[in-house]
Length: 413
Ligand SMILES: [Mg+2]
Image (cartoon, rainbow, N blue to C red):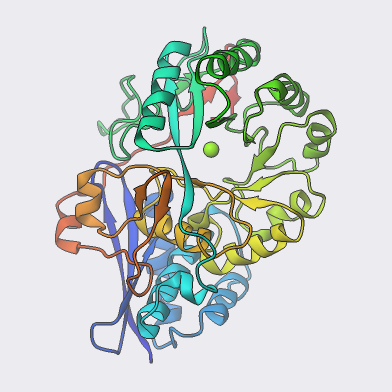
């Protein structure tokens, strides 16, 4: 069997997505992959069209591992979010083809079901503690057993994550975006200061535990904004609230700083959505410095790399919590769940509810029921692309927000 051509599809059904479709010389057999990298979508599309796809025409789509190694090492220049997102899309689409040829869902190829579904979490948020409590209660009423909680920080502007579980594809920010010379948007600028944040978050969980109790698993996403000693302090202050984990406490560059955090708190730690390979994860795994590894399969080279990361993590008592936000496409969400229900050391899965437009373009996303996600038993990943629908929603330039301190200096968003 041979790869005959590969389509790159850029579409904006509410927000931008990039997808690929790998065609083969077997009539009607193709694979679907997600190549979405929020804010740098066209860079990935160009990497695929201009550099990677020409290497794949005529190749045997069965050789997933060899193609992965060829694209990762064979170009000499390797890694980073753009290339690893492009590689992930190809990898996912090749697994999709493999499943379709076998007549089996991808989770069967990964060893088969180990559980009835993937325990899922959603996002709760609000302007104040009562709004967050209401948001958590709505999530519980929907069936969620695990909820992430974020609250607006007094004096800050545009606090991360307080929109709660708004539909993926809906407007993410209420402030008017700045405009570039061509009338298109520039990044939203948010203001963030740590001291009010450090006081507010433990008080939020005081409120949530005293009103909602301990039966629902709750946790919080720092979004890489703290210094190591701040993260250690926050972890210690949150210990009485028994959160599931403190997510992404510090910048991704400083793996060694997790030693300091770990030495000072019993609050479980999760990290990884800004990592791009298993080597980024290694010290955190082998030194048992975290409890959940939460790489983005769509930015880390796909299923082939994720199963290796999971296998290393399993050896060190670490569970998976793959990144699952609205700015990656349904094929990556499906890849997440195929891994989740096959892995021995799955922990929890982040999820979003996609809009009707996203479902129209990409039918077959995982289904949420009774607190868990599941995929169908359709061969492959189970996600398709409707190109006619995608063409109705042309690309619109968009950026993630940027963050500055009160003195105007750049901080991590
Ligand atoms: Mg996060």
